[in-house]
Length: 98
Figure: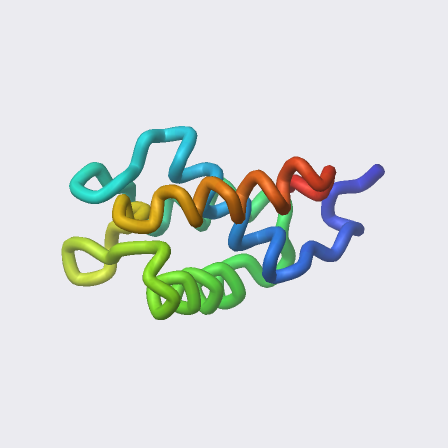
């Protein structure tokens, strides 16, 4: 199956963003560049730049992701760790991971 032919939902992309940050241990003060995350996802999601940035903005508004260094780096909010883990497990273990 061609990966580009599948349309991923916003919920699946949000779960994948948070899962990638979790796997790298990016909680609170440990963060990664936003561009690195966008590049990782660009191989699988169409219209990656605008769409991922919009979804990250949504996650920031919801409090799941913290911005650092003027919005150039991101990490997960450790205060919501339990909710983040449950959200990611619900989506990814449902067999719909990217």
